[in-house]
Length: 404
Image (tube, rainbow, N blue to C red; front, side, top):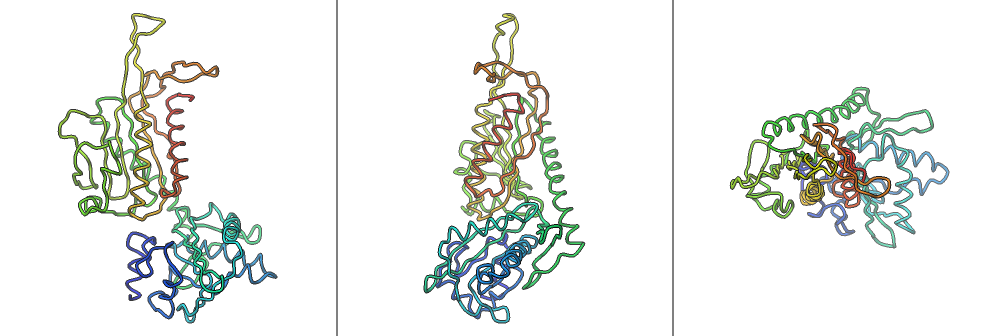
């Protein structure tokens, strides 16, 4: 494999695609690591760094300084395009030269200590995965996979009051330039504005076709401004099975359009749900609410209209779970923003539970409810997905005036 092949593997579909012996991160063994030795294809570069030992364990006298250096190394990759640090592999002129390994009595404790050390990074700790590869004599090569940061620039404060900005350039970390720091802050602010603009554009399209009160849900990746996934090609080639991923949310086969794929109901018997999967990685579901009528107890001649949200909350859960499974199939790990917008429900009643545990009706107080995006930092992390679903359901209920 040439150096160019490795670079292409690192860039196509994101840094997640790096492979050794056609294996992905987390699958590598000691035998696979042999392929790195004296191999120019895996020379140190923007994405790869070799360290023969883990300095904070070796240099006890300068432990604090070495811990700070460890944090700066992680920040430098997160502020660039992500990458891999191999601890326990020596290098010569940038090429891996020896599998030395490092002694780790307890790998769980080692990882916990490292994660604790990273807590000092601001504004938040970058996404970092660990892999412990056993080699000879009870030693390990420890590989850190640092994902490209979504909240850059990441900084360290070493010592207190002195802030440091580092970025990976070539085979080493460097202090970030003023322009790089400025662009990092501007990019973070632009993400929020771009999500708002995307939501507004999509909402306006659905409002023109509005027949009933509805909810519009988008699961938007943090990479949606620059990413491209040919969704219809992935479907046609059998790499994505939308029927399995989003079971019950579609009524016909996938149809391509300029944005990605959508799933029409040509029978026109139902206009309940509309699912679209965009080439930028966004998944969108428009779902009409069920409205029921019943006579008011206090005024027998007056008919009240009640909003039923149980089906919607169930579909919201399935949409997020299906999106998570889709990204696992794609091998992409990214932050997601779940955005819920509710339209046309003003003055509809719904049931809520009061302080005494009894059902009491409340009215929706506005016609358009734009809920704050709920962040799921890693769409492939099952625990984070479950927490994201719970937060979305809770937020949606509160937005409609439902206490429980």
